[in-house]
Amino acid sequence: TLQMTSPSINLEETSGSSPDLENSVERIESKLRVEDLELLRIVCGISDPKNTGKLLALANDVFPLPELRYLKRVRPNSDRRKSEENVKATENLLILGRPQDLETVPDETLDRIKSLTTGLVEVEVPSFAPRTKEQFDRWQAVWPLNF
Image (cartoon, rainbow, N blue to C red):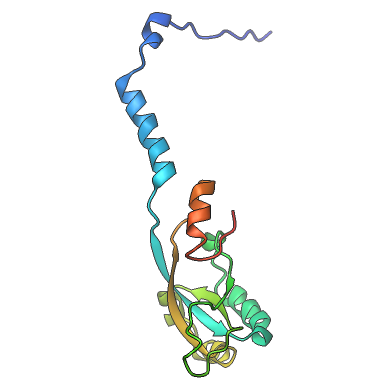
């Protein structure tokens, strides 16, 4: 038979908290609460709604980006000024990949991407997934996220 024993705890040793342990816990909690947003540059295609589905399918095949799953792949292009020529208010930004990812794409694939977009633009997005609801709420202003 298996007998379980509980470890003995010396109450005198644990009654006073270790300063090192307290500092470590405090630093971890603080880091999770106020961790600064780090940004990552990515390339997005500017797409009108009728081509967004085709571009999304192509982007998923060519640039799967499993490490960026916390980012929504598409967002409305609200950053563009309506006063700019040939920019529609209904355009979408669709994440294609990192700048270095596009350098390795065959020319025919790049031509297909360009045919489905009105242009390419580099934008900054959160470089890692939010760990807290507070981070999620704050970072949503930069790029739509999955939590």
